[in-house]
Image (cartoon, rainbow, N blue to C red):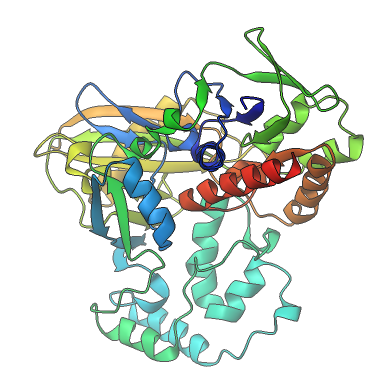
Amino acid sequence: MSDIVILGAGMAGYGAAHYLTQAGLRPTIFEKNTYFGGHTHSYEYDQGFVFDEGPHISFTKDERMQGILAEFVDEQYENLQAKANNYFEGHWVKHPAQCNLYGLPPELITQIITEFALLGDIDMSEIKNYEQWLIASFGETFATRFPMRYGLRYHTTEAKNMSTDWLGPRLYKPNLQEVIKGALSPETEDVHYISNFRYPTAGGFKTYLNRMGDFANIELSHKAIAIDPITRQIDFANGKVKIFKKLVSSLPLTELLPIIKNVPDDVMHAVQKLSCTKCVVVNLGIERPDVADADWTYIYDEDICFTRLSYPYRFSPNNAPKNTSSIQAELYFSDKYKPLTQPIDSYIPRVIADLKRIGLLAEDDKISLSDAKLLPYANIIFDLDREAAVKIVRDYLEDIDIQVCGRYGEWAYIWTDESFVSGESAAEFAINAL
């Protein structure tokens, strides 16, 4: 039973293990880190602040997934109404900006509404990239001043270099009446795709994964360094060897393929075309309550070093000591388009200075915690190279009978609950193939 092997003890690996256990099997998960959780890991600092590896919340509307995650934390979770805002050239506006223009300069609002009113139906056969889709959806002024500007900071590449197959519900398309109402009044309907979310009451987001040991044998500090698909053998950096019957991997494709023996040149060439962002997160603990009135903030200005902010103290009262607040700032880079060239600690003073510039921090605020961490895998970059490259890689992995799952295993823009389901699907396929 233990010969069904899972690589990676993150949310996708958890989903695979959960499915196999329900099927009466007991898999083994091998994890390179000394802790489980993967990208959904959480850190508790000595000062009493809890931060996740980037902002993580559960906003699935799937009742089955809601029930599974609630059970994993013994029904101990916060149920919160989501609130997001935007910082644009000195203005704070509700999110999404396309139907919340109130407070922006009148000339800008007039131009945006005029162009929006003249839009016709989108002929998708004419849409070749994300830039064209944005202009056809919102008009050139809004597209270039807002989503294209933010997207360059978040994805590190221009909209004209990106596809549209990742969008889903992520960019709300209002009607003209909604745009006009949002320009005349600050009171608008909440139309963001995240309306409510859940978050564990104590321990950070990784608490959702605390019961992973109930569903699998977990071997930490096991970094896979070689996989032979013929002999079905995995070699680990610590000298251990494992023979498997079926392998489910949630490792990033860019890490998985280089350790598989005798990968064809065309497949390795395809892997080299895959890109993702890396993120420097700066975690700050503030000795003042309620520094923010939103759960997260999108930043459009290029002269502000961070792209997005979140406020973990708002997710759970146990994420920060009483009468304090916490801020997590995200700064995005990528090896392909925007390399990280400076030590990550050098961004801490820049983040603090820019938080003061936009008015979230006061000059006399006491900062009791400041820390920077590098997340080597943040978001998949859906550049124009991705689709064809992923197909080549996935077809090869199918040929050698390795199932992949998760955001970086599928190399797709999937959320936490979708990663869990991805793991379930990979496990189901592995069982059916036995």
